[in-house]
Length: 115
Length: 112
Image (tube, helix red, strand yellow):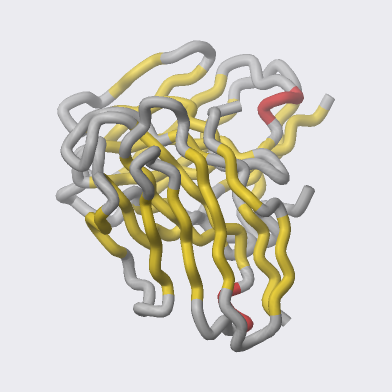
């Protein structure tokens, strides 16, 4: 296991609702990234957080937002859920900051189903 | 756990044989390449990485080859074991700390 934890494991929401997913990074890792993985596809980068600020964003609309806390843990918030938001949401942490080196360690993910 | 790769290309390999998984990447500016292994119900697990100034790197039972001329990456697994059954993704980024762009993935099935 990587030491990155995510909660909840599974979640079912209705279209139009809002959801918050949580991630605790591995000890000492100050940079957290979020990825969306649709079934049968590779993960897609949503955004990255460092020092509680968003630093780098993929091609996702503003209804995808996040937070990073002083302890480096992070939240992913999705508003106005759509059916296509159904996916596995992965959190990855690494040391070293935005220009730092270091492999990314992924958590087990949160499986979100939107009905 | 849920299935990671329902419609992915599949490589079937006999236990003990060597496996070769190929990946074509898209960005010639990418400087850092990684292979991940993802088992059902789990997040991607780092296997091995390589920078663009290298063309080969070896780990324990794995070798990554990089051909920048044709933007091709491959992962070789020696003496494939049942525990190697998973979906394998290549990923690229402009630098080690930057966002990762993942390829489509290949499912490896190891036959006993």
